[in-house]
Image (cartoon, rainbow, N blue to C red; front, side):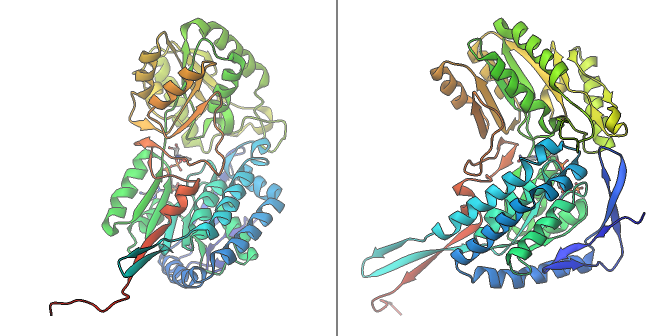
Length: 487
Ligand code: NDP
C-alpha cells in the first residue's frame, strides 16, 4: 500500500518542496508508519515568509469584525468535523478517542471562538494634552510564528493561531514532527472559512525548521510549547532579532491533599492529573502530597480505582481510557525514570512496567504507575517525566508542605484539596505556580490565562491578556497649534 504524503501548507495550498526530503509518522498504538510528510526545505521557507507578508497585508487591513466573522466560520467547521479531526489526533498521538472526541477539537475551537469575539473589542485611547491631543492604536505585530509540542497538536495550533489571527497577524506554525497532520487540517479549515492565503502557513520538520523560525529577522513574535531545555535554546536564538516570546514549558506540579479533604474527589483529581492522556500533560500533578492522617485511605482508594477503572488498549475503541505513549524512545525514557525511582528507594504501589494490551500489542504503553516512600530529592520527584508516573509524598504541617511544594525550578501548576476555605486560599496564594486549582484539577477554559512561573514559561496563553501580547501600541501625537521652535 502506498502511504499518503503530505506537503507543507503555504499560501492557501499544499506546496511541494524541491529537495524531496520527507519524514515518516508512526501510529504510537500500532508502531506502524501511517503517512509521510515533506520537510520545509529552503524553497518552502522562502515561500512561507513571502506568502505571510502578502497574507498579513490583506488580513491586517480588514476590520476586526470582518476577521472575527471569518474566524467564527472556522470555529463552526472545526466543530462540524470534530470526529474526523479527533480521529487524526488519536492516530498521531496514541491518546484515547474517548478524550479526543470531546476535548481536543472542542477546546481548540473554544479558544478561536473566544479570541474572535474579543477582536472587535480592542480599542485605543485618546487624551487631550493642552491644545493638542494624542491617540493610540492597537496594531498587529506582523508575521508571528508558533512551534508546537506533540501531546495536543491541534489544540496547540488553535491556541496559538486564535489570538494571533484575531489581532490581525499572520502565523507560520510548525507542529512537532511526531504529530504533523492536525495543523495541516487546521490550515484547510481556515482556508475554507475564508482566511486569506498566507495568513496561516504550516511548515514541517524537526529542530532545524524550529531554529529557522526562531532566528528569522522578519518574524516579530514566537510562541513556543515544549520542554524547558528546548525553550531556553529558542529564547537564546530569538534574542538575535529581539523577538517577543511566549514560552509554554514543562512542569512538576504539586497536589496538596489536606486531612479534611473530600478524599474521593482528591483521588479523582490525582488520577486525572497523572493518567489522563496517559500522563502526557504539562500541568500534571505528578507530586501528590498527602497529609499523614489520610495516607492509607487515599492510597487504598487510588489503588482500587486504578485496578478497576483503567482500560488500556486500542485508543480508537471508545471504551479505552488509557492510550499509548508518543514513541518507543519516550516509552523507554519513562521506564528508565521508573527504574531510577526503584534504585533510589521508592516503592511501587502499582504499575512500573511496559504494557502489551491485547488490542494494541505493539503500542508504546506504560502501566499507570504510583510510587510511595518517595523523598523530595529523588529524580522521579524532581524531574518532569511526562508519562503515567505519580509520586506520593507525606506531610504533617502546612508550612512545611508549602515550602516543599515550592522547592523546584518549575512553576507551571499547583492544586489543593481541603474544605477549609481560608486554608485553601492562604495556601494557593503561596504556591509559586501560574495555574492553580482549588478542589479541582486540570480544567483550562479559554477565558482563563495559562502559563508558568519560574522556568515553566514566559507570558500567557488564553484569557484577555494574550491578545495584548499579539499587538503593539502606536501613540500618535496631533499638533493643533503652531510649533514653537527656537530654530
Ligand atoms: P520539545 O521541546 O522536544 O519540542 C517542542 C517543539 O520544538 C517541537 O515542535 C520540536 O520539533 C521543536 N524543536 C526542537 N528543538 C528545537 C530548537 N532547537 N529550536 C526550535 N524548535 C525546536 O517538546 P515535546 O514536543 O517533547 O513536548 C513535550 C514537552 O512540552 C513537555 O516538557 C511538556 O511539559 C511541554 N508542554 C508544555 C505545555 C504548556 O502549555 N506549558 C503544553 C504541552 C506540552 P520536533 O518535535 O519536530 O523535533
